[in-house]
Length: 124
Image (tube, rainbow, N blue to C red):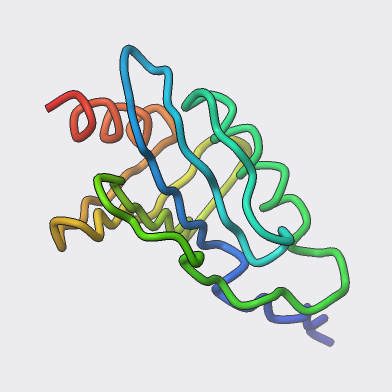
């Protein structure tokens, strides 16, 4: 007999990151995720990865995720990204980084590659 597991809504594997400023890995931004009430302030790319990993660990926890919304504030000069994690085993993530301001997207095959993408985009 095949044991079935509960399907996980895809929004639980997606986060919205808004960045106001970036310099040498230090960011001023916020992260939104369906499991959060509101947003969380971000100070570094490392903090973003650790927080997102903790949220992804909650996938098997019962409860329906909340819808992911962009927030009420005007984006202005902020850069807005969607991180979609398609597959994950420890910190070996595969997914897409969508840069909403420029309507561009890139595929990443690891957390390190995700961090490099952020650094390349924000360092321009």
